[in-house]
Amino acid sequence: MLIRRAGPFTANDVTDETLYLNRREWMVGAAALVLMPGEGEAATPQGQALTATRNEALSLQETPTKFEAATTYNNFYEFGVNKEDPARLAGTLKPRPWAVQVDGLVHKPKTYDIDELLRLAPLEERVYSLRCVEGWSMVIPWIGYPLAALLRRVEPTGKARYVEFTTLLDPSQFPAQRPSFFGFSLEWPYVEGLRLDEALHPLTLLTVGMYGRVLPNQNGAPVRVIVPWKYGFKSAKSLVRIRAVADEPKTSWNRAAPQEYGFYSNVNPAVDHPRWSQATERRIGEFRRRPTLPFNGYGDQVASLYAGLDLKKHY
Amino acid sequence: MARRVRIALKTAVWGACLAPLALLCYRAATGDLTANPISFVTNTLGDWTLRILLASLAMTPLRIVFGLSWPIALRRLLGLFAFFYVCLHFAVWIVLDHFFDWPRMGADIVKRPYITMGMLALLSLIPLAATSTAGMVKRLGARAWTRLHRLAYAAGVLGCLHFLWLAKVGRRDQYWHALVLALLLGVRLGHVAVRFARRRRERRGAPVGRRVNPPTLTAP
Ligand code: HEM
Image (cartoon, rainbow over all chains, first blue to last red; front, side, top):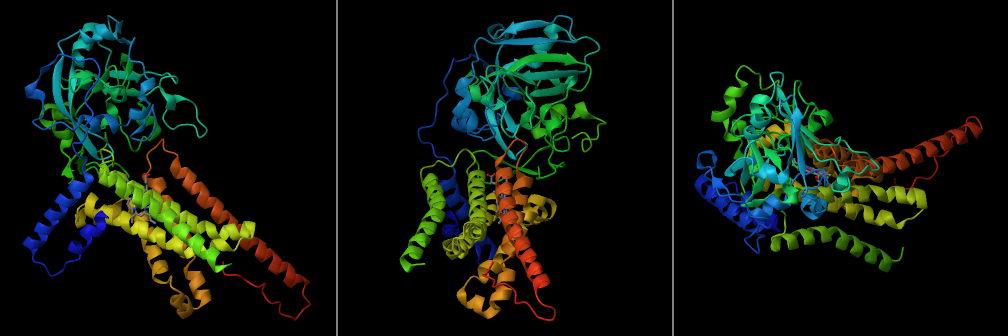
């Protein structure tokens, strides 16, 4: 229907350039009207409200993605591979009671109750952009505090060089963790990792909420990490363990397809995914693709972490 | 086959093939195309292209296995609907996804095997759609036409490769589609093998010097 409406304007070979462009813009308008979700009865955030101070210095000056989009279009393979699975199935996840074991090469290992974790440091709100490896992005007001605040409490030893994050393993709460006929290509539990200096970077956020409230289940309740300069899958959800280690953690996506998902996975328009380009992205809610920025736009803050590292090799 | 039955079957195919598009339009009108509408529309059209293409490729095997003749009457219609959907799928890619960014699209066609496969699948359907009329069958001659239309299997293989190549780890539907295609191809190959063996047997059994007529062929 849309195509037919647009049709007569595409095959025009005699129109001069300006008029042609105008028509293109007109088409964008028409297409955007049909294709962009309207205001409608937009879902409103639910769940316990969190008080947090906006960290303006570390926040994007952009309108956040609609809450509804951010909570119905998710990759959370523990619920299924389709984008709508998490929103549909996340009711089985029980974010309370919850504990996070923080251990490994640290002087003061400790298991934190989630409510204790929430009070460990002052909560900040930060508007970050989240770039998915699939080529779309969102702008999300997260709530949390720097992961460094937690890591400093447990005091990593001199041997610690990486931090490993583990997501809950419980097929009764995560339906897609049940064994299936075909088997599954991701091994559970989901494991992610950062270099220690990345984990201690002030942008790395231990995240407990978004849009003013606690995290919805489908977004990784009750606690996750957000690493805004890396592809979204690096930001592990529903964490039960944070462990300081000496060797590079064996991360889930890297194990499943090493040539496609490297350990670093920094957002990088110059390094394509082997099967698709990473040069552009579609910001959810926008019609046209926009260029992807190195380190997802956080290059000023994080590029120095990788000085001397060949980012084409360490993708 | 009675004319009435054939009309009823074709009407059913029209309905079944247009229903996904109608649903897509309905979802567009009600703002229900997910948070990433362009991707959703692309994928829905791609899914239906492949399903209808596989359905069209299933008609001959249905006859081979069950001896049914009516599926053959639907083959061309299904093939044309597959072509219709892939045109929409392709148009969405050009207009909505890349918005006429020709250099980037060109680079994708060359560099991304899944796009290359999709493109080749589309290209191999063009001659089939162009020669789908009864007049064309006559003009080409039944044999040449039949041979040309074996390209449909190539399109099926390329379409499945396209899907296998683009699907992320963890998905399974790409394997189901490939499995269906493999079954359909298997039936065809098995049929050819049986025919070949029968012909050889007949030839061996036939008196020396006498040519054996090939078994009557119905259009494959
Ligand atoms: C007969 C030909 C084709 C068939 C059977 C086909 C089929 C499919 C299928 C099944 C999907 C996956 C849908 C899903 O994820 O559920 C798909 C996606 C896609 N196809 Fe095609 N396709 C064909 C031709 C093309 C062509 C010619 C192009 C562009 C040049 C194209 C571009 C795409 C793109 C961009 C996607 C989305 C990939 C993504 O989301 O990452 N396809 N197609």
